[in-house]
Length: 569
Image (cartoon, rainbow, N blue to C red):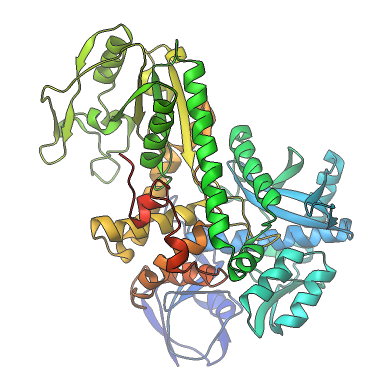
């Protein structure tokens, strides 16, 4: 039969039933890294825009594209496989304990080892590994890599798989399988260990030579290859504040008894959705009040509040909610967007493609911003500009501002945490707030939920509802959005004085209700189809909220920024 290999653009006669791995060896053992020009080993393949592992057998005519670590799905395939490798190593060294892969950090995936049971309150009991034990896990992983063991895949009765997971101490995984209600599920095997991962793995452990482990907090970080250089792991970065926010969220989930998607599904199916919504919103209200308390306590010094965060983190709603809580304390907040301070279009820097780079720090008129902020702090009255994006310049329309004793200026923008933005303004007069959807709720013990997936679903729903942008376009632009975040936002997370976690425990069931119909519109021929299929598969493990339950979401909720019905002013 014939297949078209997208990597070389040619049609090839191949034997029916050949595996993608065999095809890769013949046609495309390596792919070219689109960022560096270096060659990388093929990790997986897109078969008619659907992600497949290299063990997949080709039995029909297809268009096939082999992908490496430079592709987002290549990275996910490598990381899933690395997590199974880690799982197997921990099980070999600590057979009476359970690995918990909890959330992403700037330095890697944060992992903990837990006792197989739970305490009397149903909470996980952590086992804190010594530095020597972390070294032993790394050595065990490297030994498995040297043995080049194959990853197996098979269909298994869900009931049988649940029993295996219960024996392995993975109660969250067993609960998830029960809540989804499928007769059969795909499971993976490695050296006698059975587990599930929600996407394909690499062919064998020998493919996983680039990784490291470093001790951190009460666990350790699993480091994977860097985006910029596949042969090196991600660099160690400051991560204490982000880690603290994620740990706090995880602890709150433990208090509520929701330990993963399976438990959340159960609660929703039992009719507890509105109770969960009310509790989650109460937690947000409490956090907004705490931020306002911090501003009030420092009111004699703090006159400017900068708010930053990645796309669709809820910065606009957070600005308004913080302002609302400040008013409760007798302060008078003034909310202004930093976007008013762009430079004139002809002065806007350009990227390597010759396009205007509106996300670069140089796209902002830093001199005017600093001059006006220093003037306001000195008691002067300044005229605030409005940026006209059609004209590509600032316009002054007589809007003036003067900060009185009880006034506080709240400004939101992507560079708000970057000290270079207002280096000439006294830092004691500024409070920096970082807003992001830092969910640490996992699918199960060793499959964490990407915080960027939360935000992508939020953005897709809002773009379609408010801006008339189709879901395909949102998915196609997301890579560019993420690059901007990595360059301009994430490096400055730890400069924040306050972190606000905008994730809500009920949001994925709510987002599923809105996102699934949008994702299903994307045609199989679309280059966004691969991502649509991945997200649909992920959402397939989640029980959706019903309209009557969504109606219980208050009009001041962050979620209303994305689904509509918000009353914040």
